[in-house]
Each structure stands twice: as structure tokens, then as C-alpha cells.
Image (cartoon, rainbow, N blue to C red; front, top):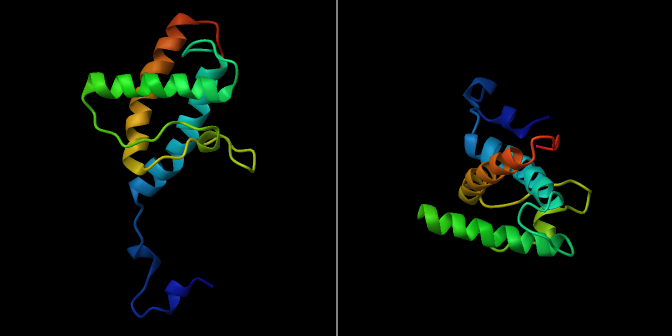
Length: 123
């Protein structure tokens, strides 16, 4: 059983959803990761020999976006282990705030990619 039930006065009604943990550290991992992979597979950021080269190009685009928008962000370079997990999942792990900034950038990139490639069903 859950150890919380042993606490005096505890009731499930007092639990509240934390949007940072549900969205920024949960859903955005999947959304950002899968969208970034689709953009890399579509060579949106330019031609590259392998996934890490695509991610390097993507990171340069991301940093240019941050600079143009005057957004401060501590996101380190995108690495394959940030996107491809050992269990086969595709998730772009990032700190909560960084995930929100990545989402804004990746939304613009995917919108641009979709406009350039109207027949592409990935995005």
C-alpha cells in the first residue's frame, strides 16, 4: 500500500497535479523527442551523415532561435543519448524550463517543415 495512507489526516483529495512534472518533465519529453527525430529524418536542418550530425545542426538552429528571440536557455548540445533511450523510447530529456523553450523552437521548425513538405505525413 501507499505509505501516504499511514499519515494522519491524509486523504487522496489533497493530492494535486503538478503541471511542471506532468507537462515539462513528462509529455514534452515525448513530443520534443519524436518531433526532433522526424525533423532530422526529413533533413530539415540540412544534410548529415548520421543522427549526431543532424542533432548538431539542430542545436545550432536552436541556439540561433534563442539568440534571435533573446531567450536565455542552459540546454546543452543535443546528443543521441538525449533522444534515443536504452529501452528504445524516443524522448528528448531536458530540464523543465529548457523543455518549454525547445517546444517553442520545435513548433516553429515543424510548422515551417510542414509548409515546405505538404505531403509529409510524419508531422
